[in-house]
Length: 117
Image 1 (cartoon, helix red, strand yellow):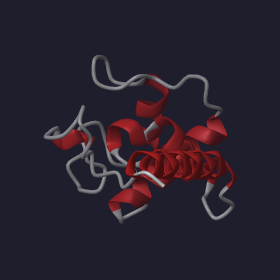
Image 2 (cartoon, rainbow, N blue to C red):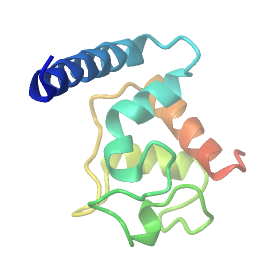
Image 3 (cartoon, rainbow, N blue to C red):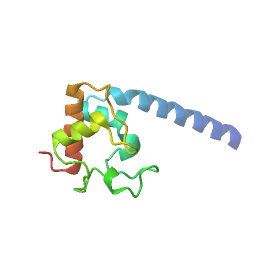
Image 4 (cartoon, helix red, strand yellow):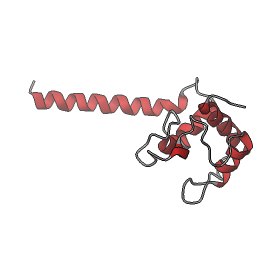
């Protein structure tokens, strides 16, 4: 088998595995509702681990949800309000989420800091 054919086969296998794993993500039963919502709506900007270490927000201290440097409040009510209303020019609002989803997401975000209240 030629090296280019072998590389093509490996690429196809890799892409297939990635597609299967991506499709299974919403079905992961061990994830809480808040974590599933976070991964769907927040991880792109805040990072899977909440560190804010993403290309768009690297260096923005308020994108890091794992520390105690929270500009718009660090309690569940303030976080829920931020999720619902967004922050002009910094974070979009998520009005499509139900109150229960907002609460689940806010609890999960608090847990990223490691000091959920």
